[in-house]
Amino acid sequence: MSTQRGFFTADQVRAAEAELFTRVRDGVPMRRAAHGLATVVAGELRARTGGIAGRSVTLLVGSGDNGGDALWAGSMLRRRGVAVTAVLLNPERAHAKGLAALRKAGSRVGAEVGTPDLVIDGIVGISGRGPLRPNAAELVAALEVPIVAADLPSGIDPDTGAVSGPAVRADVTVAFGAYKPVHVLAAPYCGRIELVPIGLRLPDPNLAALDPASIGALWPVPGPLDDKYTQGVTGVCAGSATYPGAAVLCTGAAIAATSGMVRYAGTGAADVLAHFPEVVAAQSIADTGRVQSWVFGPGAGTDADAHKRLAEVLATNLPVVVDADGLTLLAADPDLLRDRCAPTVLTPHAGEFARLTGHEVGNDRVAAVRDLADSWQVTVLLKGRATLIATPGAPVLVNEAGGSWAATAGAGDVLSGLIGALLAAGRDPAWSAAAAARAHSLAANLAAHEHHLAGTPISATPLLHHVRPAIRTLRAFAFGDS
Image 1: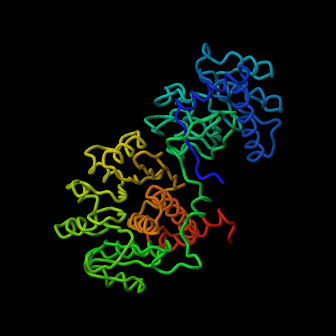
Image 2: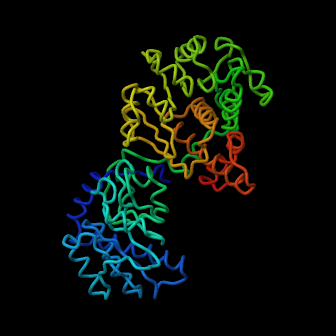
Image 3: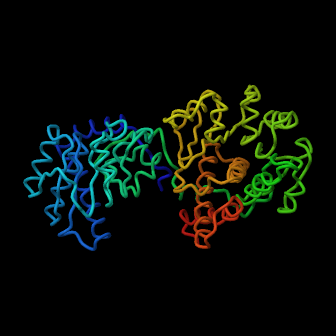
């Protein structure tokens, strides 16, 4: 079972392509890619219109190899009875062999998009940077039919997923040979992604996503010889009498994540116990008892007393998750982490990241999260639709949520509790953060589906209630459980 999906930069792909060219005849990789593209387009035509022959497709063709891929794919579709028109955005630099193949198949070159059933985006490829140029942007803006992108949607940075102006928003993207960062960092622009193997030999990725089945297989569940202590005891120092909700959500998530025991320290104990009587509560860190990880920050405050409690937690040799108010305290006093050797996981959103670093995240989120992890020597989970997890010396992990349902007040408190529970069970900090992010986004999507059918919006409480179903779903991926 594969444990992760890798995403490869333009430079990595180009190097792999150069090696491939030494093993196969000239033109073979492009025709492999084009065959895969034509197959996906034919499937889309069949699914959307009920047939292939007699349907029409327009190619938007730029000057690079993606334009060549589109032209070759057009020639293959023409031989299957599809009416194909190519609009050349830079005729003098169109791929010569691909254009000849298209014309030989009986297709035409035109200046107008027309009224096709589907459009293939072959405007730019992995060497392209920046938004669409005005003529291409005008053509794309006028489209009212499905778009299939060749390798990646044009106008989006292949390595960062940054969108700085007009860009294609595809219904389907056909990735050639390898997934690129754009496919996960700008997923809403890519639509469904289909990978077409072309024979590349790829290096170890610097950006990867954990496979859901591998998460389900490694998620801690009680064994026949486990007791409440061996399953992991999670300590939570969150919330307060003023903000008890954060404490309830955070402790509830640790319980749902199958912690053997959750111990709570803080002034929100009454509300926590009202919701979860199984929690063992105390007023202070010192009186909490033995735990195997700490979660600190959500709703904890930023006053002197909160600073003292954070210092106590970080002075232990236990894994610690720091979120929300805890991040504000760290931004003001980074020395709290000085000489700390035990695993530390920081979970900022973009605003908290800026407070920690003194600058905005910027377009290259992968580089930004990696730099913070390296400079602070911690694991950093940068929240977003594509959540990124960086640990010094390791590939950056990514979880694409598939939606923005988790962007709701209190959802971060649930995520922190999940990470803390996995750390208490002895899991690696990067894996814990990435696996928790996956379960969290799945819980949000399950809750959203249920509440959408009921016509009501999602909040953090139904998200929390769907954590256990999300974990069961991940385990079903691994073991086929119902």
